[in-house]
Amino acid sequence: MTTSTSPIEKGAEKAKSTARAAKSRAKDAVAETREAARDAATEARARAADGADAAKDSVADAIDSTADRLDEAASNMTDDSPQANTTARVAGSVSHAAQSLRDADFATLGEDLGDLARRHPMAVAGAAAIAGFALGRFLKSSSPQRRGARSDVTPHHIPDASHRGRA
Image (cartoon, rainbow, N blue to C red; front, side, top):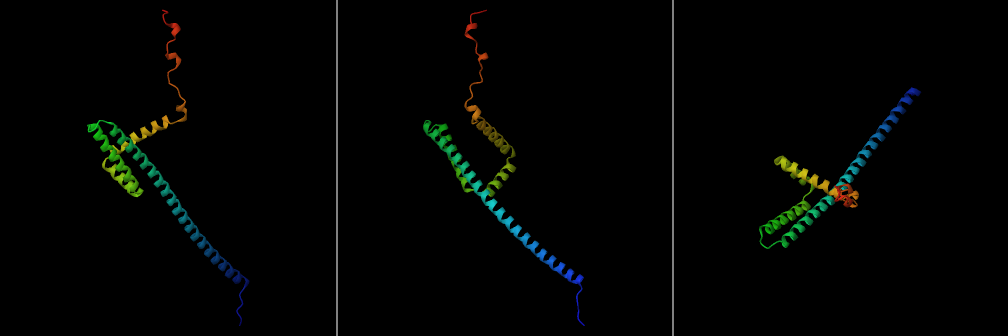
């Protein structure tokens, strides 16, 4: 007796085979997609870290510049005056802060800032408000509209010389 398979059985077997192949290809595609997503995320994190490091260095340079100006101001003051001594100490502290910023990584900075905010929330809120005010003033003063701006005094505020002496 020969076993012959019916066309329906052949079709069912072929459908099962096709489904297994499709399932295998789908699994491979999902694995490739996951790997590509991991690679893209790794690359994005690396680029973000590079950008953050560049920004951190830029801020540290600005802080160092402030320390240099403070140090220069201290050297222009009367020797051994309390103001000169205080300004020199502040310059040293600011310079130390800049170096600490350069040496720290962002995870440590975030943890430190979080700890500081938990210990001294009002000081952090005040510092943020002052920084926001300073940034706003800086942006306002450096806007292109302000560069060519004249005084807000208009001619109607200045008495006309022809009206003097008339009563």
